[in-house]
Amino acid sequence: MKLATLRSKDSKQRNGQLAVVSSDNRHAVLPPAGLPQTLLEALQTWAETAPKLQAVSRDLNAGSAAGSFAFRAEDCLAPLPNSPGFYDGSAFLSHVVRARKSRGDQMPESARKVPLMYQGVSDNLLAANAPLDIMSPGYGGDFEGEFAVITTDIPKGTPADKLAPYFALFTLFNDITYRVLVKEEIETKFGFLQSKPNSAFAPLVVTPDELGAAWDGKRIQADLTVKLNGELFGHPNGREMHFTFGDLVAHACRTRPLAAGSIVGTGTVSNEDKGRGFACLVEKRFQEILDTGEAKTPWLAPGDHVWIDVNLGKASVFGSIDQKVVVA
Image (cartoon, rainbow, N blue to C red; front, side, top):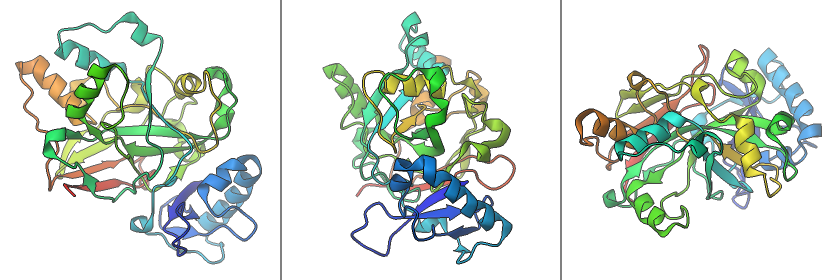
């Protein structure tokens, strides 16, 4: 099942209008009366709502859904414009290793046992085609292609091996980062705030069955295709996640419950093989330092074009993230 959030005709509805989307991304239909009309409401009643939405999805894919219409990704908001919580990890150790090595450092053994994670901004999340506002070229604007899971209500302290039933949906997002501000905030030893603005999300969220064999119950083993200004920047695969989705969510809920609609990200998708390219500018810069002693790739500049997508041989799984860089 694929779901999206359309811009609502009601200007007061900041969470948009839930829509069920066909597997080929060509058609959509609104949930019938009596079912939740926003994704957040659906997730809050997921056990009873999901089977009913699945039935709508089956009718839509069979061509028998009443009231279906052409789906346009450009009409979408972020699937969850306002989430109760956004937690972003760092599950790909090759990203951490490159960062450490480029600074002449080694990765501590603890990094293999406990995932790094920060709690990010979860309101006013951006649509896939929203302008990528870097605010100032001096901030060191960067993109990060990542996978994420969206959860139902999770009790505090739920262990990793018990979390799969709480994984409702998966998606793709661009974790926008100001790398120069990251350095300033790390020096305070008090975490990220200004260096991590609102992330942009692909238009579609999907249930695990839409991923087919790419979902092994722990990881999304699919290529993430990233293009910068029309040129391939990288196609790393999610199979090298050191920490599984279960590990990441267990870390997030270790001392707190997670509310339905919480988003937990994987961190930048990264592979050990540098030939697969990269899903963020900073990792390419790390590799350049290792190869030549100098980072040459510039940070984002106005007019740049960032495109991120996942395709499993059919239609785009999540729809593409397609952003033009601006200074607003």
